[in-house]
Amino acid sequence: MTSRLHNVTVDCADPVALAAFWAAVTGYEQDIEDDLDPVEDALLVAPGDGPGILFQRVPEGKAAKNRLHFDLQPDRPRDEEVERLLALGATLVLDMRTPDGKGWVQLADPEGNEFCVERSAAERVATGG
Image (cartoon, rainbow, N blue to C red; front, side, top):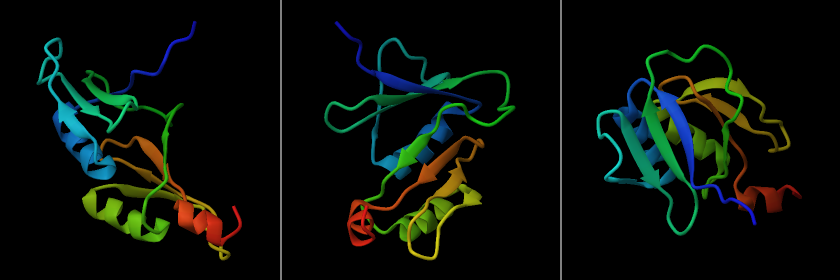
């Protein structure tokens, strides 16, 4: 017997605003559950059977680097996706792109939570993996 990942929970100051950012990033939709306080919590549900993302208000701010982060694989070229995410309010943390087209970009969401944008599946095929 095993457990399946139901939600990934993100502690934050403003669950509604952060959920709106991540909904725009992922295309996940906000869900209202009876046991969630709509001021203190916001839940995004994945299409299909994937885990949701739960945003939970906490009193303290982010103090250090994340110990867990999202790695995103866009359905468009990585560089286009990075530009889109920056326009949504992400900030650049670290650019690890290489001249041969490989690598990734580390961004932070509006509350400073780091995440990475990898190459798209098509870019991986084009550059040999």
